[in-house]
Image 1 (cartoon, rainbow, N blue to C red):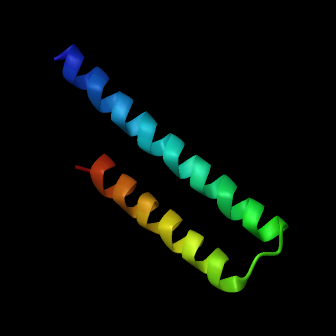
Image 2 (image 1 turned 180 degrees about the vertical axis):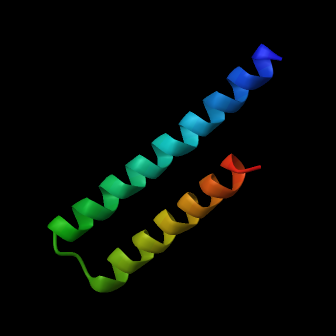
Length: 59
């Protein structure tokens, strides 16, 4: 039981870390004043990751 909980926490932390990295990437694109298309694409990927994380976390 503890192993399953530990494994679940590992994957949740890993996905959370992935979201933080994507957020940092979006911030860098904005700071660098990249094209709106590039920023929008990164924001879409961030939103997908966030929705997936929330969905799995609420199961």
